Length: 611
Image: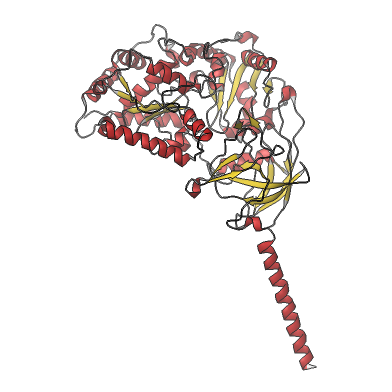
């Protein structure tokens, strides 16, 4: 009996050990694709480019899977390492995925025609998914293929405790299209809507800087610039700029200036004196080094046209450009961030680190050939760049330069008092960049607010969720078709609305700010941490409304709370600043070319302190 009992206990122990071993073995090998170093299976496709809301931007993950059962589901194949933004794909070709954390190693995934990746104009429309980071260890293995929701399928899921496993807890289909083919996001995961959870988690992971705080930062920069420094050697040109600074600060008081509306400026007296001095004395040297297409080859159409227009007009200027660098107050680095990004994709795909090294090599060339870079550490050098990546790839090699950036994000290294904001101007015709301007008079603008556009980033789906088809005076849509009639309808809404919503996309900037000004519609800027163009001299709160991202649910009440008299004053001011945002083939006084150059001039002078 005793022996039998011992045998039974040993057998039971062996069975328990076998079961435990089986469980461990199963958990270890049931999904080999999650193991370190496991490769993806043939035929894999990208389910989504995942911008994890539980992490501070710009941390990104992506999930890849294998097509199962036609177009209805994927098997989760693996979650790759932390990567930077995926934003390039060749049409009907491979998706190029950059793995920045792995020394720039590139992983290439084949994209099938049936994948959820949508290609347009040989560029990838980003796909985002919502993944709630949690401590759950539960595993999920498949996920529905989502219908296209303005190129942004939402996927609810959870990471496992080791952050290497993904549990798909819920997925949902796209909603019914709303008016003008906009898209309303009303799906729910549990008891909390997806967009609300995105909003709350995103706000937890990032610091918000309001327009009032941006104003305070600027005022502190101005005060700091007047604090005396110990005497040290200044170049003759810097001494000229320092003398100009004294003249600007002591400008005679002027309440009016010909050709300018004084109320839209911080200080019309100082701006007028500063502009006149720039117009009279500024000299710029342009480096001849650098080969096309990255250097000296501007593009003047599309969303990044600002850098191209400035380059063309700067290199063609007989007034400001000189051949002798010894006489220059500023040095222009004539590269195109758009061409650098596009060329790297077409010829030899590179990561952000590669592009950063490319610019670093250019600076080494300049510093080795000329003495001017080393004289001030590049502080009297500047460039103009509009591509989203420009702020990151220039942060190190050109950190001391005056950077004129479209992506003017205080949370991403933009420095008020040194860097300047480049307006995003979406140019459709290089021959006539300012056609079809203007709009209806205020008395005929019966729409309270208008927005239409792709659901880029986390904010626009929230905007659409709260205001799409919710109020007859709020025309808030998703992406509109790209045919001629729809484009005409878009302009008609802009010209008939009192307020035009300028909601951030993937980054803080949007061409709708300048579009609103062109169509004489008061811009409503919803983009925390964004420093608007020409912030150094323009008082933006006189002609624009700033709404924090967290106040989107209160948007209509905020706009209705603005008195009619105040709206009329702002709308008049919008018309007054319009001239400062226009490109001309032959630059004219106070136009966009001169305003960009003045911002650079202004910030260089601001950096020079009395001794």
